[in-house]
Each structure stands twice: as structure tokens, then as C-alpha cells.
Image (cartoon, rainbow, N blue to C red; front, side, top):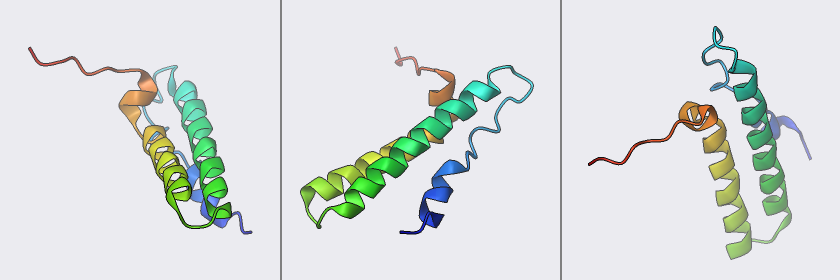
Length: 83
């Protein structure tokens, strides 16, 4: 099994935010942690035969990857409900 597909998860594009702010390192750590969870879920999914369990793990991997790229989520921002 090649490590090349997993490498795309480990390059945090969203982590290059707010370098002047002291929180940039925290963003990178959170982003990498989530990307590693995505890699783990994807590897588990690839080990399974096609079916609902495999699809669920693939969706979980995509969700972790999306969270790792979400600058707002990594910084802890919350959207306020419209009144």
C-alpha cells in the first residue's frame, strides 16, 4: 500500500491562516489531527468490501477532511442564528 494518497490529507492549506496571530500553530495541529483521522477512516474503508459500512467510513473521512480545511471551524467561530 502506497503512502502517496494519504499525503494529500497531511498538507494543511487552511493552516496558513493568521500567521501574525499566535493561534496559527493551534490551527495547524487541529488540522493535522483531523487529517490523520480522515486517513485512518479511509484506510479502514478500503479494507472493507463494497457496502454500506464502507460507504459510511468514506463519508466520515470526507467529513474529517472538510473540517480540517474549515478555517472558521478550526478557530472556533460559530454562526449566529438569523433573527
